Image (cartoon, rainbow over all chains, first blue to last red):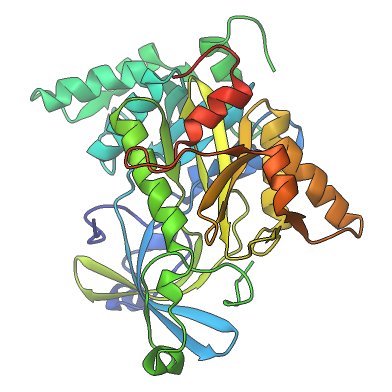
Length: 206
Length: 206
């Protein structure tokens, strides 16, 4: 499964882009979608430090085609391509339970479009749910400065509806109805474990 | 954290190696350590298909430095480096519980040397254990054709001893004593979930 960026997966690190687009300054790929990812990285580091949970972002899947050895003890990957992820981006352990989630942000104020969510990822999340994992999406409306935790079981209703020919997005009002608004602050930046406690554990906070 | 292969992480896919070593046919990097990984990939695919568990290998962590766009809708990574993994290679969900393991094989017949196991990975496994995850190592003696599941709590004794100045390996006899020998077959290739049942669940098989 090879990616032909920018149709599919977007890279999520600060690459040096050598296309003409970079030189004319039209597109800043490195900036797209950085904020939520950065917030989650810092949140996860905080959770680990405080011994609340161990949750990590998975590495970006890459198909390596060619490796050079400019010197004996150095390997340089000189040809590789982005792959479509077959799982979600984040997983880990919390209170012994398996945690799995995907995080997306949108600049749209009225709906969350199903862009960059792949069938394989939804299938993966459905499988993890079937095995009693705690599975959800973190959805940020970046202009509204609101971030939600939507349990996968709610998300899946809208996804199934989309597969049945329905709308390829979830309305903001529906997200508000079917999700928990996350508290944001300094530490943790995006307190999604409190929302997990609220929805999945009935017996108090971590 | 950049890798200077071959001192640290070994790549685990069939790369095209363009160094002089490839041309003289001295080293076949692509073959090293392929067997156990392939067996685990097929085992995990079987477990998913049979709805026993959802466990995946994480992508190889790579630091992307440069991306080219030879045409509008194609991204080619033209410079990247292997990173030291900060977690273990495999994780997922089984019976609602978090599963986490590292897999290694050795050609040594008398001991399992701590090569390519990084401090960060051991720390990660210790953290996951503290959060009540199911954490272990799969260790294969490739010449002996024996594969073991060693619970992390046992492995950690030997690792701590090594950090205290002890031996940088585990003797075969000790592995045999502190691990469960895995059944190997066609499907699943390496039945590590049976060993997980035996050690972590007292109430029967999956």
